[in-house]
Amino acid sequence: MQNTEKQRDSRKTRSSDDERGPRQTIVRFFTRTHASLMLAAVACALPAQSQQAIVAFAPPGAVSTFVNGISTSGLITGGYTDIYTNNHGFLRTPDGQFTIFEAPAGNNIQPQGIAVTSAGVITGGYWRWAGWDPVFGNFYIASGFLRHADGTIVNIDPPTAIESYPGAINNQGTIVGSYFSSVDFSDHFCVRTAGGAFTTFDPEPGAFPWSTVSILAG
Image (cartoon, rainbow, N blue to C red; front, side):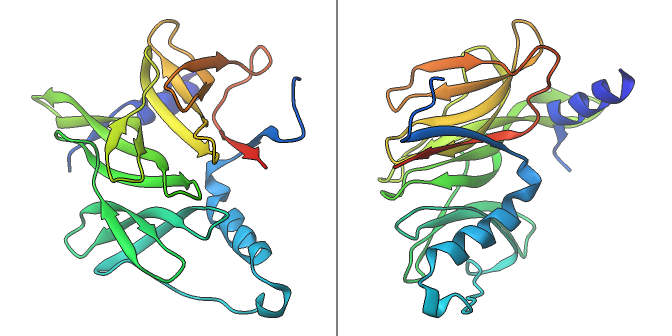
């Protein structure tokens, strides 16, 4: 029990220093497999004759780069750290052009794209400023964002969320993920429609929705 609480506490704060249809299936996968899954997705998307070609890339000025999502049109999203240790989100086009973006307005930091549609709509996470503590200084909590194709970026936390973790978006604009609720102080999965309506669902009793979820659509 103490270990569980410690895990949850580490997620809460961050100091400053069936019906399943043939076209839509919800799949669970652990966030730590993003890099491996991404490499597999890229390999499968390449024509058979060019599967051995590997292209290394990084946003301009990046010291470390994190790739999280690729669309069927070849758009790639993720995040990176620059030489000043600042973090940014990015969108990369198939021809290698980068668009850099920041967290939603305010004292918010470290955006990172998680998934992207063929039209360039991105969902992801960032650290939302939650206040100042005389001992720990500024502290932040995990939140979700939606970046429209025109560059507009907004928060998309569910209404009762203390923290939220978008996992994926399909080409229809449906987003799936998980969040920690202020109502019962427990974790839940959620689905957000393109219009902004949320539906919450839970795994079997006793399960802990630690993993993110992915939504697949034709």
